[in-house]
Image 1 (cartoon, helix red, strand yellow):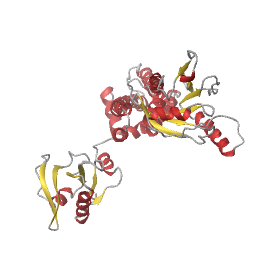
Image 2: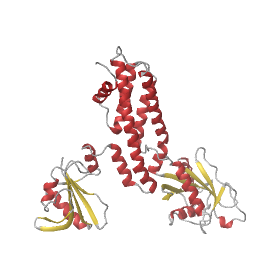
Image 3: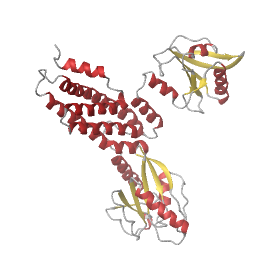
Image 4: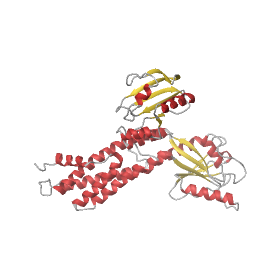
Length: 425
């Protein structure tokens, strides 16, 4: 493979770390400076074609014990753009090329340094915006790998039992083998179904929730959005119908990312643009994870939508002449009254919508599809009495699960057959 390089740190800092990976990494870096012993950070002056490029901290990682499984050199450069550009031009001149997006991780996967689950968890960790997302990427990814590794071992052993029933029908197999096989398949299928049931919550946490504010014109929706965001993101005016399109902002609620959206005021109107805004508001509400139904004192609340959780929020509470009802939260975004209670309520709702209780998390569509296909194949296997047909469904289950953690090979199944039964003695 070609030798590649790219920065592995963000731009704009005092230091930029540049990674060089590939068969020629050491020889190329050796043209810029004398290489230190492996894994020993050393300060080196980088030179190319008779001119100084930078003074950098350099570390070498010989294959296969590196991130990519190849020879790797990491150079901690000064963070200026000119420094990075000069070193990059020198590396290209010496035969390396800039890495494509994700190419280091792809090589790590191809060289057995990462599996797909680890690569996905790492990408989620890098993209994490909130504490809950960070925790999900770390602990959820580890728990998922442990669960699927266990499933893989158990499925391999169940396949071995099934193959024994097919290939050695006349041997003295224990009579309880088939009953244990069916029980094991059912337990495995049920565990997968339980994890699939939790998948929507995990996926919502990874992608973020959508909370939509609904109300009539001048209900205080835009003022509320600005208060939650801590900045002026929506225009506030006494004129009805000011907001004509969805305006949203990303808010951290108790460590959970939530996109809070202000919408056009709900009313009948002859204005075609405002009417389109009302239509979009209703469509956005129908896709929401949670609704904030807003109304000022004396005004009715919008009707909630079936199947979508909601709260009733009485805005402009500084104008109230009596306490609000128990099923309402009263706030004044102008004075701050009730905002602490509202944030706590919204954070609790966000937590309930994304709660996986420390379980393994199927947070990506690919993961969900693989486990779903495995469970469907196990369903089919449990419905069959013919041993050979059941064995074929188990092979399909193994293929689906193998897309997550690696294929179950024929040799593995044979090893399990002959280690678990006294066959062919």
